[in-house]
Length: 267
Image (cartoon, rainbow, N blue to C red; front, side):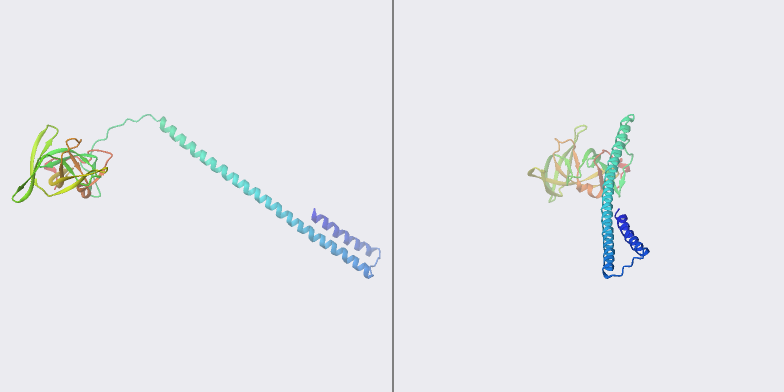
């Protein structure tokens, strides 16, 4: 509209000029020339103002369109994200429905390994393992406890004595399966202090001895503290002093390392 108005004014002025010329009207006086120049300047100023107004109007319209576009894109992004989340929720619902709709599977008890397994050259043990202690060649169900620093064995009637100027100890090992008592005499390696529990500050002074332990297909001399475990479920506890160099423990299972007969054991 602004361009049309300015163009119309300019055309009118030009038409007027040529019309004057066609009527042989000659603008020769100074006043006529100044008047014509004033009109031309007026049309020129009006045209510039109109063009400036048009540019401003176009900028405003472009800005409005841009804002509408940004708002629309933000709206569509939000809608897309909500749709994606709804789709994920629906897929989870379908998977859960399918899982619950499947017929119950028969749970078959897994077979124990016929031979010990090794990981990184270390034997794999469960939370409980059958082990052999020599002497007196007794097989115990032992608790495998990586949280215990030292191993211990259920010893009864512990008595220290001297033999040839060295400190010895005699004690009894009890076979709980038949209540048979097996007397043992061996050298004392040292004494250690064991804290009773994390909440109890009292300590117990125990004797440390060395016995041969067979676990899986491994047989080696190992250190045990002597203490009465009569009130505990397991006569034998295997701690880190034995486990750290030979074993990895899987507490989710038991008897992962079947005890080899003595004729098949390896040193």
